[in-house]
Amino acid sequence: HELKAQMIGKLIQEAREAISQLWDETSTDGGQRANFKAMAITDESLFTDDLLAEHEEHIKQLQEKLEQMKPILKIMEKREDIIKERMEYEDFQKDPDRLKQRGAALTKQLMKEEKMSRRIKRDLPKYTELLERKLREWQTTHTEEFMYKGEPYLDVMKQQEEEWRRYKDNETQRNLRRKQEEKSLENRNSNDTHYKPLPGKKRVISVNGSRPSSRGRAHVGGPLSTNQVILNGSRASSRGRSHVSVKPQDKRSGSSIRPRTAPSSTW
Image (cartoon, rainbow, N blue to C red; front, side):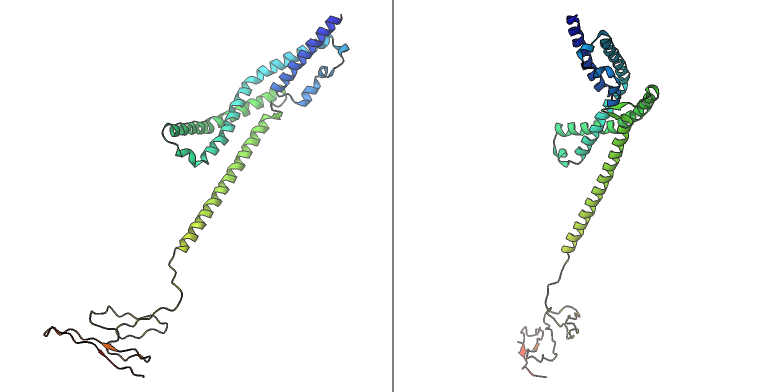
């Protein structure tokens, strides 16, 4: 009798380990686990054939449930892989250095990104739609939500899409701010390169006898001839500067007349 009790105790312990593993695989929540009261019996004097049979029956139920869940779990795993791949693809797009590769390495990288993009655009919506239908059917048939890592997977999908929309909105705003900052910097640089006149009073030149304007700007009447000087016989300035008169060369004699300096006078 004692040997049988030891054997039953060992079999019950092995059954409980199998049950714990199946609970994890079927994402059984805490409430459902607590409903299996036989698991809470720890007094070895109560380890009987009936208790062992109860454990074995629960194992059978969990195995049947897992077989029903497997097709859905397989789709969920594919979808979760694409969800991770979606963020990896986003990181690739933010890294311009990846395009600095050459030859086969660059071709391999671009082909990888193309496959990722195709799965994200084509397979992710397909798996999401399929799972929504399968999970609602499961709820109707089993009167319970399909759990994934302790959460209803319908809620998980909804949360993932909301987080993705927020992420894309934030990225859009960040890119917009960056473009505005770049444009503002370009405008400042452009303004800095415009011509700026040097400070101080500008030199005034009078041409063909015209007087400078009241603000000191020269009035230009046309280019000077080879043998013409600015004043052309006008009065010398009151500050004693010389009046210079130049006559053209005498073509007949081939000689030129030296310029004559007029005496300074005060007006």
